[in-house]
Image (cartoon, rainbow, N blue to C red):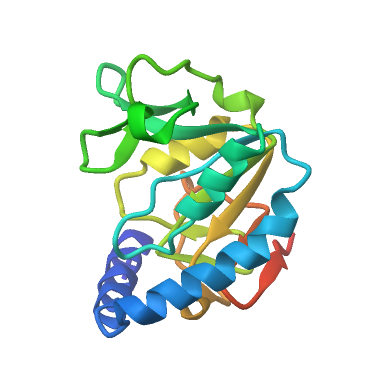
Length: 190
């Protein structure tokens, strides 16, 4: 089995397992994760968040809190012309959010763009991560492109059961520095 096939197989198994997790459990897990991340985020002045999908841990409360404290907060946006993700700053969640190309919340076009190299912290969604900082995404490779450019500390976010000893990788896969789950935070093994 190739790495590409192994990744597709793992994605399918993770999706099937995720169907058994209730929304109530996801809410508690999200709350625990936010409590764990809050301390880690204190020194970051510029944070690239992500807009969680229904099957991802919800970090949106941290975005709201960070905006309220004056932290520069941004979300990725899809640049259809270049077929890559960039980042735009948020100032007002009610006015600044639109639904993007893939049905994901992203900043409106009137929001100021921030170069990806200028972040102190990048919060990274993933279906799974491993102890070496490898990430299993949804299979399109867009986040790998973003992470290859992004500055700052890259922090993967996933469910406890999705932090693995190892996951299949390919040469284009980008790594994160840390992985946080609802019950633990780990630094990447070099």
